[in-house]
Image 1 (cartoon, rainbow, N blue to C red):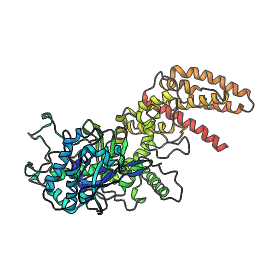
Image 2: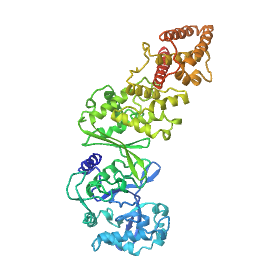
Image 3: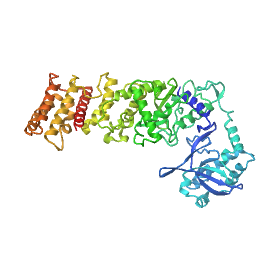
Length: 581
């Protein structure tokens, strides 16, 4: 199913001449320089093809004859390659590249043979006359040798447009070479169902997965008898079909792709079976606040407003088509999460749904996260990466648990339960940092709502009688009384007792209530704060009167509800203060 969906995406994009999807027999590769040759094969210049990206120069993505799969040994590419193949020299010296240079020249001559083309003749004459041992000297006259030695190179014929590998006679020779499948087994393709097609012996490696090998990894590969079934040592995938699905996946994973996101160690790609606006804005759903600071007259700001309206609509259960009229909610949508696994890629999850179904699940995710914000500048729809950072040591992305990140992303996109480790992770960070933030409260609320089927209010609910919720509110009142009685204190009861009060209230609250009596007594002595003392005492009595005893211990779910009650009450204090001011 995965390969078929990718094959369909390749066919869809290939039908669009502006999509940039490389045709059969080619691949998009990082090319940095072009060697400019005259008709006699003399090097006349080196053209820098790199593109400026910030302060760095990065290689340009160019369609070239399909790259050879190099698992081991020497394999040359046709009409382009690294300096070790094209120039016979790189940072390791000419002696280490003798075999590579010979392989590059041999492949070129075997494919083109007696081809009468000026471009081919220029490359062949260049290779015949080129001295790899003098490569650094000759190249240094045009470009920095260290840059050339570490780059992929193509060829250009001086005085003509385009690259030599794009010349029509050379393209025909290459395609004829790719079509030579006489020695390949004939099979029924597992992707298209076609009969008697040449079997793909090696599938193109997949590049662009975060943390994966730079040479790429495989989602289809056999290299040991343990993986063989039905006496087949290779998958029955046709040569053209294998090219299609690998090219499509590599296109989705390319740098700058708007259909790729990275969460933890998982790289997630998504696409629709037909052209859909959902492909454009799904990445923004993972970071909807990225454009919020743009000026109001910019296109980005208008996009942010539209996205905000869309999120509000789907969170409230409305149809997305009300905000995006050209959105077809019946279109099938695919989500594939990949993670590195040595030379292979493991599939974290695979989800097939309609656009409407996917948006409904995302809306449910934001509906369960919804809680009153601590500060007005915090995002109403918190992005996933920002939420996950609240579970990590020092609030750093690199410390996020990969398993937890993948599980939360899957829950958001597929509607399954959140990982069981989510609540302990959030509570652990609260204990360590003594802070119940907006994001942590939102995560706790979402977990309790979906996994435990509890009804958790968005803001303070004075009528709620759950003992853990009331204890959290009580702790917030005790802390507030201390802050008013001892202004400027270096530490409050939150810094010392928040964790123990939520886990073992029966052992902690008796002492906290005794100290609170001292704080309110101090407030009564201050004429300006006398009213505060009576206010806090009344709140304490109302809350304590709603339960009969203090539990010795509380479960993690009860601790989560304690934190929600504490967060709600603290927010209510400051909200009232702001209204009074």
